[in-house]
Structures are given as structure tokens and as C-alpha cells.
Amino acid sequence: MFSWSNRNGKKDPELFQNVSDGLKRLYRNKLFPLEDTYRFHDFHSPALEDADFDNKPMVLLVGQYSTGKTTFIRHLMEQDFPGMRIGPEPTTDSFIAVMHGEQEGVIPGNALVVDPKKPFRKLNAFGNAFLNRFVCAQLKNPVLESISIIDTPGILSGEKQRISRGYDFAAVLEWFAERVDRIILLFDAHKLDISDEFSEVIKALKNHEDKMRVVLNKADQISTQQLMRVYGALMWSLGKIINTPEVVRVYIGSFWAQPLLVPDNRKLFEAEEQDLFRDIQSLPRNAALRKLNDLIKRARLAKVHAYIITSLKKEMPSVFGKDNKKKELISNLGAIYEKIEKEHNISPGDFPNLKKMQELLAGQDFSKFPALKTKLLESVEDMLANDIARLMTLVRQEEASMPNQVVKGGAFDGTMNGPFGHGYGEGAGEGIDELEWVVGRDKPSYDEIFYTLSPVNGKVSGAAAKKEMLKSKLPNTVLGKIWTLADVDKDGYLDDEEFALANHLIKVKLEGYELPAKLPTHLVPPSKRGQEQQ
Image 1 (cartoon, helix red, strand yellow):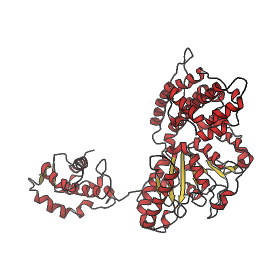
Image 2 (cartoon, helix red, strand yellow; image 1 turned 45 degrees about the horizontal axis):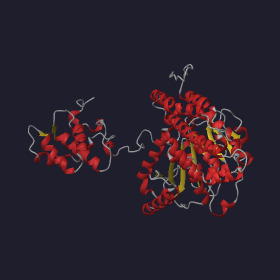
Image 3 (cartoon, rainbow, N blue to C red; image 1 turned 135 degrees about the horizontal axis):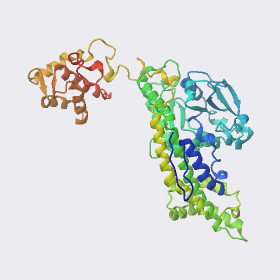
Image 4 (cartoon, rainbow, N blue to C red; image 1 turned 60 degrees about the vertical axis):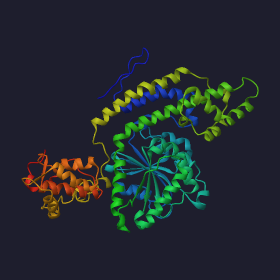
């Protein structure tokens, strides 16, 4: 059990048993009072509940219809889930929360939003039109023991997007984006057009770029040359919508359990899939840190919101001309932002979207806004300055106590071990299953070079070996590591086998593979086996 105490004036110290408990208490005791007083929930995001802090990491899949979202989930779990439909037409017409459960079945949306153990209660605000299109698919699957996955309706394009869904699709996605740990945008290599609705959705996810990953799916259906053009076109399209200086990480592959149609890029697809899998597998380990980070973002926005509301209240006349003044203040909201920014030394990135805030303020009665309550703001400031720092220490302690907390099962286990593991039998792993020493294949050519270096007592000095190794043009840091690995007996000289090993490792590096941290057993020269450093 971990705990830390926090003294607030003369109050007794609070003991937090774990990170989840600490987050709940900080939110309930320090942040919620500020949010409630200044009606934060009417403008930005509904209040958080205990389930929001206790739930497993969630992955949100977003994309146009027939980009492979449902197939991607099926690929990860290697199992069908209740309510699953796959086809080239827009098949998934509902939000489906795929979660772990002992009994397989489907829970309808109206029942979901009254379950206090599920983090979906606040979705009730989107009404029946949405709840009729929201279900939870429960099943017993090892992948779902660590994460939950949210499948979404395919985003419409062309004429289809003119048909109203009956609920605010972008707002629902924004609600999920605030609470999930990873957002995966899927694109089809054959359909790169970004429709108006998709563009609106991506803009709604604007403040969550750190959670966003892009997958270019079905990439095995086009040639290498076409893939280069498609990748370039996708990056260009995304650059126009996602206004960030950094390039979005795009994973290229074919995420389903079918033979590759064009196998030319198999190694690229394998490497990309492993990178994406590692990213998803790390979610349980980083879940507490993500929740802490989201709470900090929320607290900063709540502070700014309080300053905006109190500034508007202060400017309102007490009796006459309220309506005209309200219109003037809404129109000059940008100037109020700048004033608050300078007065309170707040970053421009902490302010809510100007246009959206103006729209929301239009329906409010400014005279009913509360005045500034410094104690509430000081409490949140104390939380950000002191409590969060202590809670961060607790996060690190919990992470250290659970180092192997990763997603397991399904496709994640398929390439963990054995000959189909990524990179197996390649680079430094070449020859791992062979009886003969793999370096021996090229040893005759290495021996020719070795004997030109005038060995003494069957060994060449470091200076002599250095001149030959420098011909590879590799940096000294890399060559130094190769020397350390190749000098198996640590005598400061290389015999013919060690020299051949050094050249083999140079070849491995020049072919683009990483050097091992420790010399693998199969690379140890036959005459040195049993002598290598333990």
C-alpha cells in the first residue's frame, strides 16, 4: 500500500491509498467546487464520476465507413464480438463499447448510462437518438482484461453526410476523446478523401493530439510506388486539418488475418504493426499518468473558465442596457481573453475555443454569473502546485510495483516468441537456430584481411584493428560498442575469430539492424564458449 499526506491549513492530512483514490479525492474536494460554481459543466464537459477514474484504458477507433475499424478490433482480439458486422457498405451504425465480461451479450445504451460501474453515465445528455445507437458488447477475452475498445459508426462522405444522425456526432466523439487513452484514426489506402464530417470530427479532437495515432490500413492492396504516393497524399491532407508543427505518426499496414495481396512490403508492415502493438500494450502501464494528465488539463481549463465568467460578470451593468452590453462583450471576447492572459500570466493554449465559447455564451444570463471567489481558485492552484507533484511520486511507485502490466492475448501474443517474432533470425539474430557458427560463413574473407594486419601470436592490436574498422565509416560510439562485444576474452586484442565477429557485427549495423546489448550465445566464437562475460 502506498500513501502520502497533504496538509491544507490546519486540516488533518489526507491519506491516499492509491493513485485512483487520490485523483477522486482531489477532483471531488478541490476541482469540482470550482467547476460547479462557475457552471463549467454547461460549457465544456460533464462532471467526472468515480467510474471515470477506475475504468480500464480505452481505445477509440474513428474513420470513414469501410476503412476496417471493426475488422481491426476483430484482428486484435482474434474473436468475434456480439453485434459485430463487417462489410464494404456502412455496416456499423452504432457506437459499440467492447468490454470484458464473464457473460457474453449486448447491453443497450439506456441501461448502460444508469450503471454506476460503467464510465458512460454522462452520455445521457445526448438523448435517446444517441442512446438508441449506443451499446456495450461484453465478452470474455484476454485482451479486454487490460483495455476496452470503442467502435464508432463509419463517418459519412458525399451525399450520405447530408442525412442527419439525430444527435451531435462530433460532440459525442469529443466526449469520448476526453476520456480515452488512445484515439486511432483509420484511413483506407483506396479512400483518402476527407469528407466534411470527417474534417469536423478531426477538428473536434483538436486538444487531444497527444492521444492520436493514424493508421493507413489495407496498404497491402497497392504496390510500393502507389503506397509512397498515397502516404504523401495522406500527410498533405492531414497537415491541412491538424494544425500542429509536429508530423502525426502514421502506421502503415494491413490489420487483418488474411494473406497479403501484394507481399513486397511485408517487413515494413510487420515493423509498423509491432510499433502500434507496443504503443497499445503500454496503455495499462501509463493509464494512471494519463488520468493525472487529463485532470491537470481539466483544472487549467476550469481556472481559465472561472476568470472568463467573472470578467463578464464584472463588466455587466447593474440595471439598464444589459442586452446590449452582453452582445458587446461576446463580440469582444477575444480582447477579454488577451486581458485575462496578461493579468494572470496564462498561456493562450489554455483558453477554450473562441467561436464555440461565443456561441455558448449567447444563451446565458450574464447577470446571474457568480463573482470571483478567490478561495476556490487558490484551492485549485494548491492542487496543481503541491498535490499533483506528490501524486506523481505515487504514480511512479505504482508503476514500479507493476512493471509487466501490458496488454496480453489475441494478436499481441502471436508474435511474442518463436520464429515468427518480429526480427527473429535477422540482424544479430541471424543463425540463432543453426548448429554451425553463423560468422564462419564469411570467415575466410575476414581471415584474408586479418593476416594483412600482421598479427603477433595470432592476435591483432586495438590500433591495427581500429584502422580496418574505421573503413566502415561508422561513428566511434558504434565501433566502440562493436569492439566491446567482439573482444570476448577482454584481453584488449582480437584473434582471428574475434576479428571475424567484429566484421560480422559491422555488417549487421551497416544493413540497418541494431546491435545487441549483450553478445548472443550463438555469436560467441566456438573457441571462446564458456569464457564469455556472464
